Image (cartoon, rainbow, N blue to C red; front, side):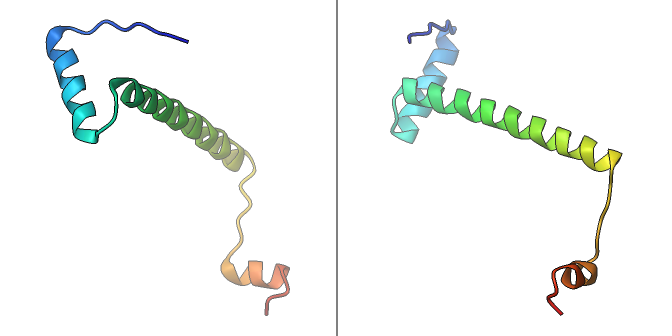
Length: 73
């Protein structure tokens, strides 16, 4: 799939220089950046869901309690 993005001259130059510095193509840099952003969003959503679940039913155990529960003592 091909996607077109427009940048002004200064932005385009900055992007090209960054990609060159990283020794990757502009396409690779853009792909990596977009996928990293998507992964960050996914991770943040998972964290927020876990925090909501924790706040609704927050059961915690100390290390000693966990050891007893798992018969590690």
